[in-house]
Image (cartoon, rainbow, N blue to C red; front, side):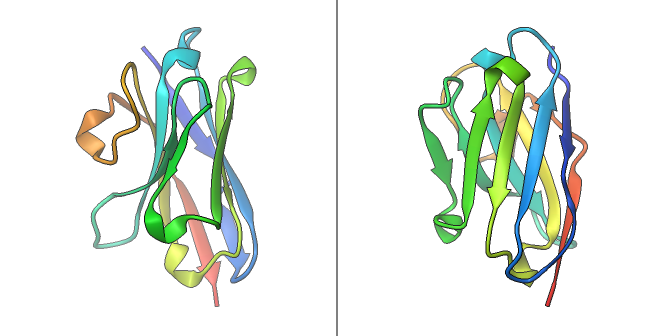
Length: 124
């Protein structure tokens, strides 16, 4: 069983940066792949990016490559989402999710555990 808690969201001006954290409980978190998703009001939850269990491979939504970076520190049971050059369209609730085995899928149903989400608001 894994519990996930996101933090680091907030209000930022366009062009600014935020770093989100996804802290996990459980001694085996280092064996979980983690995905980040976001959901704007009235829209579906969408894949932002993810990282495999070792941290050796990262994956991003095509439109976000170059601005967002995912990393993990397994010693701290934490995965990070660094977001740079933020735009108003990045405004959403950001969620992290974990799955026990396999790669980093882009679909929500393939993840077993979810955090409660953290709000990111980018003002113009």
